[in-house]
Length: 122
Image 1: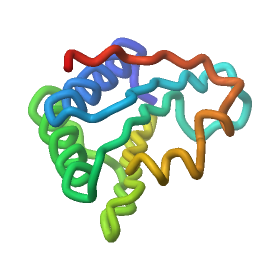
Image 2 (image 1 turned 180 degrees about the vertical axis):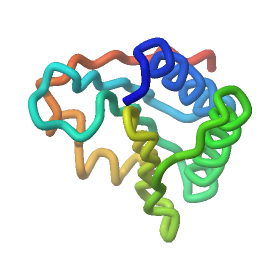
Image 3 (image 1 turned 135 degrees about the horizontal axis):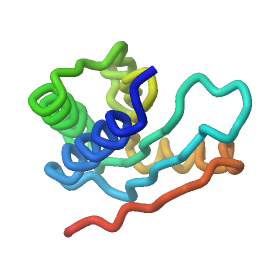
């Protein structure tokens, strides 16, 4: 488990990576108060196309790698780039295409989590 300050820095770098390629509707779900969760936080966003979803993944990887020298433990969903999950152990990033995000609505599934919406610069 990563120290709290490192988790905050990781989330900050993930958000920067999302903003660099104009990811939309960024939310942070704090899962620490919920029993039996596999991670501390979800960071959720969406892109407008397969290309943008892939660009978001690349941008997040680059930001986190350059600043924290961390790599995701696991990435899945790159085959079709409709929903890509990046697992940084204490933080799991979900990058959706909008229609897939609406369909699965994981914010509602984790409705007990404290949710923070990130105001983007664009």
